[in-house]
Length: 118
Image (cartoon, rainbow, N blue to C red; front, side):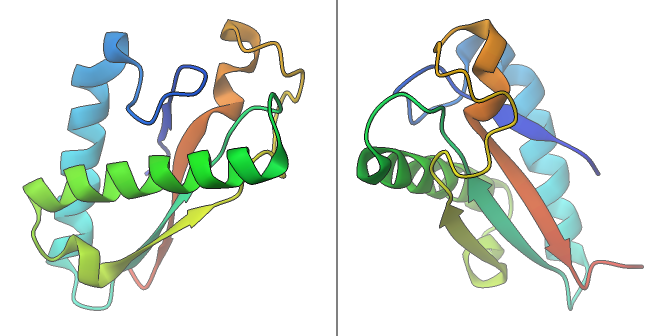
């Protein structure tokens, strides 16, 4: 299941205009991880290049933690079956640091699954 949740610059909560779509993703992912006994997930936060490395490491971690907390509403076992990681801007896709729509994909949370094969 390929999915990325994107954020506005400096925001810890996802883009409001995509909230309904993101809630569907998080419900489906939480259900999948919850249903399969050995399934685990890494919730990986990222940021754009603007700002210091320390600030962006913290911001990206807070983004992943926010997503984990929301997913736990849908599946209470998620905190025990997931880990949150903040990568800052070390894995930028665009990397311009313009903080507009061109580098929105850099401000994302993505999911890495292990043991989820049915």
